[in-house]
Length: 551
Image 1 (cartoon, rainbow, N blue to C red):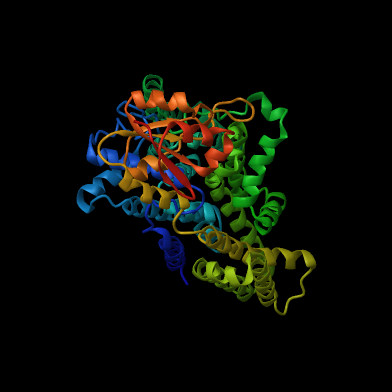
Image 2 (cartoon, rainbow, N blue to C red):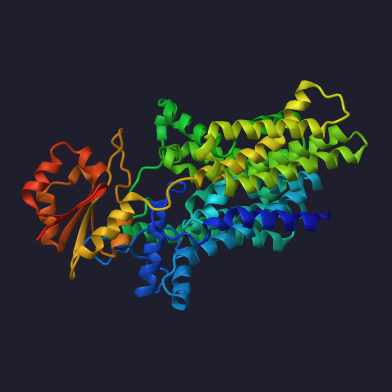
């Protein structure tokens, strides 16, 4: 099979793995815990479509009695969704399909990047890893800017690597364009600055650091993001609405060195979502034994740049809910996996290509089983449980490793490494399947559907949010956007510690007619349920939420 044909097969596998969620509505599905951000994106798209299509003026529905202008990343996705709405009607699934196309473009770019760093066998193994990785797979159909940002990151890395090697101006221009888009899509792409610096310092291209052209183009690439985020900061100061940029403390600061939970949180997210056990073993072996190979040096520089960014921003990236931030580490993990598999193939073949083809067949079979797991494993989990499914996948990988090594005396170390290769792909497929095993409609969404007919006439709503300070007293984003989106009402998002009778009467004087609070919020504030019952008539009392009339 030619490399081109194999790449097409990998792209088709990615489509198969991603497509089941491409037509999912914004119904609070428990898929990767991103329902909050999905409603933000769909809300901005709806407001663009129904009102001002100016992409420089995104708005949200939780802006109180104001127009709802909000500080956010550049709204590539919601604005494109609004354009689709003009043709298709308000179908948020259009955004999922747009992100799916972006994810396939990112995979195609990654395959080209890997082909420039690895032998064909290793490049295809890295491509299989990236195609099945749960973070890029989840972002491919999620209404979040992270998928577009990942496309920009991979494009910038690919063209900058070519520029560092061949020093062609057009490669630098393409790298700058992808970098500018990535930074506008999400500020976490800023780790690329350190990545590029490490590449130049460690790759024999230090002379480029003295190139005025490189610095001028770099500044031009960063300038649009600087201007946009300064504009967003001004919006925040004037309107007080943010999607988590200024409304939350991200940087760990000196606490990074005194409080171990920040480092532990970052490492936990990396081990859970980027480097599961078999992948970690292969990556560590590649880092130690193959550290002089160019691909491994690039992968380590890439991973180190993301790790530094995550540690600096550990108040966010170390939280469990922020696991999807770590998607930018996936390309580095995939390159290390590809380098390890390529080295194993060389060891096994020893002049006999048939043995390398045997390992390739094992990886292809493991990838096919991983794709099948996306559809089958959620149904089997109810019968067997996930621990048994993981054990069965390990047994399957072991048998595959024995088959790949057939007729060759192998030490325990080589057997373990060969075992890790198919087990890594099987684990990734099961991880994706596990994320899709949740309910297809959330309890708050069902409550919103039941409450919606009770909101008659005009008027705004007040919605209880989360707490506005964390356990260290640092600000966190308290808003709960999904009730605004599902109920199609504008209004006030109140920090949980500020939810009380007097605060609600103040919101009523500013135009709020109803108050929505979920059961978990009522339980979080002692005496709140009794105080609300004595002050406002309840209109709806469900298992997940309550609705009160304020006027």
